[in-house]
Length: 557
Ligand SMILES: [Zn+2]
Image 1 (tube, rainbow, N blue to C red):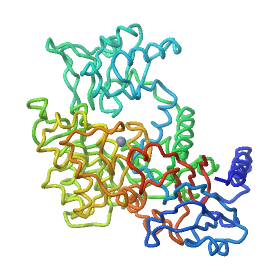
Image 2 (image 1 turned 120 degrees about the vertical axis):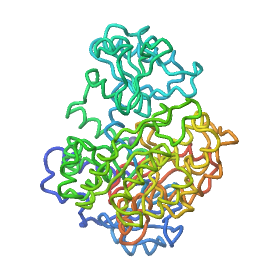
Image 3 (image 1 turned 135 degrees about the horizontal axis):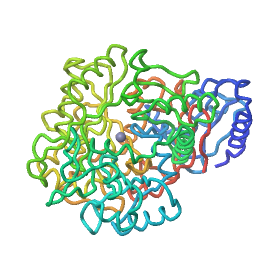
Image 4 (image 1 turned 90 degrees about the horizontal axis):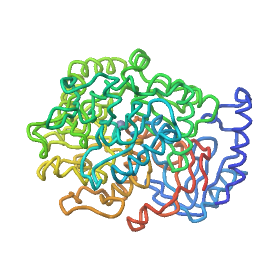
């Protein structure tokens, strides 16, 4: 890679902007006055009819030429030459489902990611408590499914480490959390406390709360949650943005966005310190603007308000996903519906009035069916071009699977969930239901639009893990049981589309984004290995080499 001159000039410009010169310069996303870039020196997959090409020329934020290097140089005279140094370039990778503030917050708080046992969770909590000696402790990221203890952590596990102040540690999926006895005392929760609607307070055989709160029950924990203030959120969004560019993401669909998130992002775009292109789906608490005036775009073109994000049910790991028949490993239990049907339809109608998009979290087959039903109630069951989306679309009854294509509903899925859940999904669901679980290939074959995302901070937020999971469907260390429906893997070309062109379609911008073609925006991701040809395990060893959003270099290895 020999684009350090380009990079340093980008940094110089950013520094100048940080010093207050922003108003003097045209917005980065709309400039066209620069000599541009010519990118070559490695395989370039265009994701379009041209297939692989030798070079690409960029002027401003647009691709002006795709083809032979000599012609690219003629198309952009005086352009900076970017040598891929043998790396392989693709259309820009897009994370179709991320909680962007959470990605940054994870970098700044007690992270329990990768915890391998209750013992390790305790030692990480102990270390955090020692270096943060006062106040409530919030942490996130544990997942018990392959711990040797084979159970959820409990209040007793936490009490053994911190007993004198509240502790609340959220499971990686955010759909469950464990607290210590001090928290239960502060909240006044005891054996006689009833479960709230759409939530569960787990109790042991004697009726004593174990400390685990599932789905809506976590709303009771509000008093022991430290809400990040605006400055913390600003810091978190900056960290998430830099981290994501360094991993090779050029854009993301940001889910469950709060009001101050959008204000901070618009400000970051205006002052040219935001690297990614972001499409946002608002939390109902912050949906007033988008439901009043519909989708909008900030003056830089970088931050778009798309619609709203609703929740139908919980998650599979904590048995909150709503199933049509009881869980195979919990008799009589069918999960949780977290938004009443009437409320969901009411919000959908408001969105439809202003042509805002609707995205609904649905994991279980009942959650998915009821969401499709609600969408059909508002839009009708014939195909529309609204591009409403179901987030996760994880377990689908065979009867409902064709409805995605038939109605034009996008399945926004996370390949990494399938390789994280493969340890427990078979016991939760039983073999028959695995047939419609994480059914990427079946959905594609049915004609549905499937885009891929990470759900970070639930998952790591790494494009290489998503690509690997989609084409190989094995855990990161290469494990998959024989019943894990390996026929639902997708081809390399399909995986690439799920991470590039399909996310563009999901936000209605396939004319402008998603492939490397003349006239489209210059969003490009290069990795050190060719994901289209290397062995699956090699995909995970690749590194993001170069990331360009709108003609601007946001990362260079
Ligand atoms: Zn999510």
